[in-house]
Structure formats: structure tokens, C-alpha cells
Image: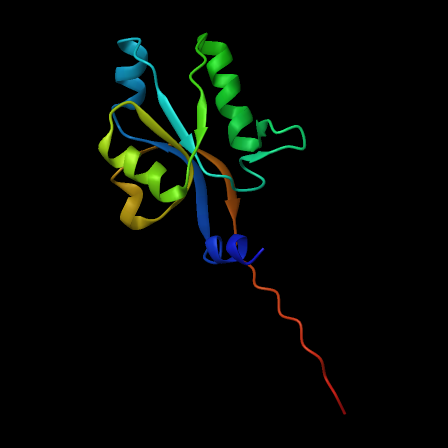
Length: 127
């Protein structure tokens, strides 16, 4: 739970993100698209049957269905997915907070969900 709160502690926009040329090159040249994500409930996670699901996964699968493609979504640690996005062509990374520093570096597709960070505090008052 702390990981989730820490990750979304600032107001941010979650979006599907990919490099500027990914969709153009991938679809126009019929190259496969490398799709990465980390496990991050509720946008992408494994269900009780061990299947990858979630809001962003369902969106990607619907787009793939309409395009007639089926590139797999690979679950990797966040840092590895970001590294692949930055260094490999035809790469897509599911859900990233959209920040001013990242805005011009990527081609954004989305948003998937907008979040506002919230911190919960429990305390006990004694008299």
C-alpha cells in the first residue's frame, strides 16, 4: 500500500506512453510493437487466475483487436521498462505519470486515469 501511495503522492496524469515514432513505424511498416508494463493495481495487474488484466491492459487489447495485431504485453520492473522505452524503437510503456519533465520526451496516448494523491493518517488521542 505504501508503494501505491508513494507512487501517486503527487497530482498526476496516468497515461499510456510511447515514443513518437512507435505507432507510425510499427503500424506503417508492420513491425511488431514491444509493449511493457509493471504490475500496478488497478491499471495493470494479475488476476486470481494469473492473467494480466486492468484498465490499461483492456484498452491496449481492444486497440489490438481492432487493428488485428496481438503483440504481447510483457510485465517487467518499472526501471527496465523505462530503459527499454528510452533506448529501443517500436516500444510502448503502459501507464506513466505525465510530468513537465517527461511531456516532450514521449508521445502520449490517453489518459487512462487521472489521480489526485491522498495521504491517510491514523492517530490516537489519549486524555
